[in-house]
Image 1 (cartoon, helix red, strand yellow):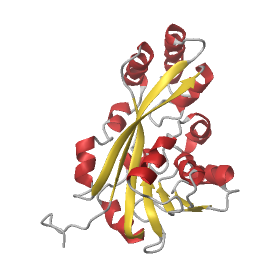
Image 2 (spheres, rainbow, N blue to C red):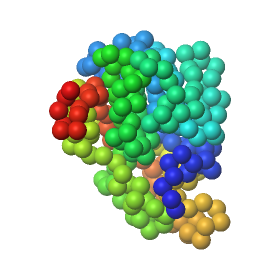
Image 3 (cartoon, rainbow, N blue to C red):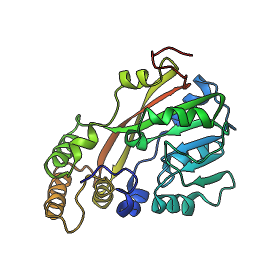
Length: 263
């Protein structure tokens, strides 16, 4: 399967809307408190998908423009959030947002960040940020161990996922994110987060992942059978805990020249 970040979620929009996790409000509280980001700061949410990360900032008082190249996901965000006058969408990519110069106070990128050309985006995000504006990158990292369910789920993905290892290796660690900001990092934080899922929700959460085989693939039925076995063995009171560490990084995007120095 090709790692086509723009279209690989098109057939998964319904499951994505219903079963993907949101992000903890503590993340926005951290931006307001520790980095003095005002609640009225305008946000361009890059790779916004169905609007999950947009809602986090809308709920905190921010006007938000969702930049999303996938038409089906963008339409889902509009259906969900379009009634809010502070919400707008743009059919752009992370590297070519279509937004005006110096038009936003924050550029945010959540779960989609690992799909971007992470060097090419810097010039575009600097262009659309107002002077002093921040880039905020965050995502939910699923915990791979700690409970029988988490460990069993990781093994299930290794057994049945189509390109799971290739996708999972795209996530950045703390050191690489600090390096990505080229000396402009202002802060990093981690927050506990999670979902409590019954079997139907767990099934939908799995199928929302781009590396999960879909109906018609020879691994699809065996994967769901294995998921049922795992759920039956590990559920407590009819639910399993899908636990995350939400990782967040914020800073300015300083321009550096070819020698690695600031001009």
